[in-house]
Length: 492
Ligand SMILES: Cc1cc2nc3c(=O)[nH]c(=O)nc-3n(C[C@H](O)[C@H](O)[C@H](O)COP(=O)(O)O)c2cc1C
Ligand SMILES: [Mn+2]
Image (cartoon, rainbow, N blue to C red; front, side):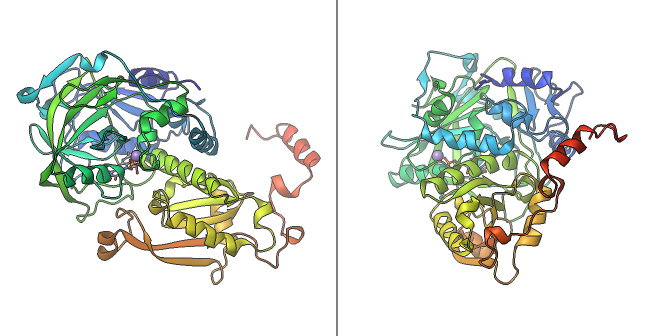
């Protein structure tokens, strides 16, 4: 594991791969910056680093597409963020993240101070307008300051400290509104404070070391501290520093920190925003408790990471999709489901989950049995509630290979016998196709497509895959590959 210990260190590493495009031309936070980031996602261009932002004091910078996909280097940003070699295969990243469940958690280490205290604005000195929060998409309900930062809250009994990503927009000089969904941990912990009639202290840590968002975006179990899980993953603790005005700690590597409380009584409208599903829906807003900011601290020349959510591929797909895949993989193994791999294809905008199973387990037409077992496990899982459409496949399919996946779905799923509907399941209200009623209830149907061999196809009667890799003897494959240039072809 090669841990990149801060955002600047991560950016320096990305520069060596040609993954950073510094932009010295002044850009406008009002739609221009969002448009550039979005175009970078769509072109899989290097991550834009904005050095001058109109109307914002010099020094404040923005990093777009912090974990975007790259035409040149594939998932290098994701792999490096996870402390892995830049060329790591995506299913191996998922395995590594899932494996952290088996490691002893390591609580964070409190240190005295860090660069995030270089500038401190308390109380009346807080002015969120100083920060380069962009109006990302036309139609957004406000300027979204937080799209990649970690929000930190603790239960009133002090036993559980949760780190999670949720979107947050600016609503005033020292007020904000954010997505507080009841079934997410932020919403659950907020409900505990609200029941006591007390405002909930929060801290928002933006621009942390790059591994943090990957676990802040991971649906770990209730009562699990993400910070301890990250420590376990890294094999060493995450350093944290005390906040100025609330009893919470933030990662020492934060570039910008906001502290304050979520009101137990006052609400303000939040949203809509262009979302991970790829749509900006006028219905995509909701009342949010008022986030009252009591302190703002930041490093010299701080960098704010920004995600331009929307049609795939952006960070909700590369980060959240990956983290949810890892969580489901672990949960299936806990339940002794014969899973080989889990993957949420980026292009599905986190609406499809592919589960491959070991051939030994699916033989003899056990597919239908496995469908029902999978449905049962997913129906009880919060991570499962994010994915409404599931493809169950044999392990010969690489779920991260879209060509193979599409072919297998098209040819192995029986339209009459291969589709299984499970009604009235818990689903994330952000799932794109839900009706108004379904969205309000957070419930809808899940479909599982059984693409496993049927009972009349025992292992020795399975049709063979008609591909270079599968239908030619190894020696012929080797000979052809070896002689490829001799035949006159240029390199593949
Ligand atoms: C870029 C990005 C943006 C996200 N935005 C939101 C959001 O606005 N609201 C939300 O509920 N979850 C959002 N998520 C997903 C949550 O972070 C994820 O489900 C996580 O598990 C929540 O933390 P928790 O498990 O502690 O509840 C986002 C994830 C990513 C990677
Ligand atoms: Mn959590």
